[in-house]
Length: 252
Length: 368
Image (cartoon, each protein chain N blue to C red):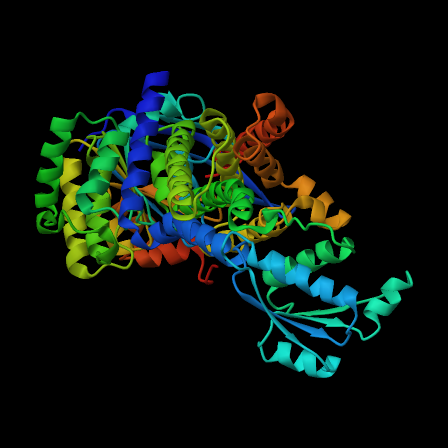
């Protein structure tokens, strides 16, 4: 596959948090591009800065310094241009438990200004696609983790965004759900959407991503295709590569 | 983003809030029923007319003055609206200890002890002290009896007695209702706004909403519109309940009442937002909420006049916005005054709304 244009450009990105007088550099001078139409993975141990980077890419948190451009729009000044063209599946599956699946979807659709007729059509289509059509009118409070994940995904794509951010898609899911989530990801990618993942699972990164950014302690320590990463580190699997790059100690 | 878009988005949020409210049956009870229950309980229970309160008069004196006094007490009681407040029993030769035990046993609400030398001393213009034992566990009844006795005794001599029915059911309710409305609206707007946001923070939904193209202003606006509608509906229900269930009388302008309530609700919503940005979950919000609600409830003169509390308590009350809302509501609803009489209250309440709202919007915007 040949990717021509970068759709996300990150330059010298730094984020510093001040907490109880302490200065914490969560993201430290990171630069990379995400190319149009690829599946881009961000991996790293806890505290590596993945989530902070994710929050900055999705316009939720402002960078301390450096720049991010999403589809040419500056994350600092044009976040209102970026939000309508990205879809976000947050790590914390954020559904209103006292609304039904369909009502959650409709709320999202309305907030993204999807015209009503198109919205209803898409909701029916996606509910069938992820096998939730028979649960459409149930409150999501009683949904299983897998059902919530599937519903969250389709909440994020109702407005047909060209870019999808997906924070830890398969954490805590059973293998069946994980498979179906991956299938969905590939389907969206096949439709030309760019996907940005964060994940803990090497297997997931390996099988899904075109390119992987490895982060450690706020820095970008490697960025390449899964094959090249394995090759460079001389390991047969990504897990070894990961441990080699980020160290063995357990992070908090 | 245009104003129309902001408003449309705000309305989406408003509708969502109402839909969630309709699903939350458990919340409906405190929101709508609790204030009504409060009015009924306090209205009938605390300020209620005393009916047939048993009073024992122990007269150890055989003189003319004590006879006159007893007759006075007896005659007045009978003439009260055809509805005797007290039921008098007369006896003699009872020691104070025995009398106390009768109150302990709940046989009498009060016992008046007339000493054997009452008439004699009165005739010689000497001071004489009567002992009135009361059941102080029943504050309302004992308060009424004490007031009643004081009035009678202050007019030594054959002066016609007049007991103004300031203790009556109606009057206390008139005093209570405006403030209960203000209290309800305040507690309701702070608690429902704050706990909703705290809950949405807890389950991540607020962050999810903020990821959409909807501006934070729209989110706050949507929640505010929801609160204004909800709180005004609650106020209407309360007023109707007070009117039909306990016979509350409205003397002033509904328009002014609405104005005070709208401004006060805005302040409450602002306060709720500010408080919700200081906590991460619902549990902590409710702890924080207690800190605000409890003093507001008991110090600001909802249940008793502010003039009756000690100075230090009054100073605390002056720092709490509910004090001014209570005053404004009473001035309008009981005294029937116009906007001039509540201008100070309105200015303070508007400042409160302005400050909490700006702070709330500012803090909410800063949050991720």
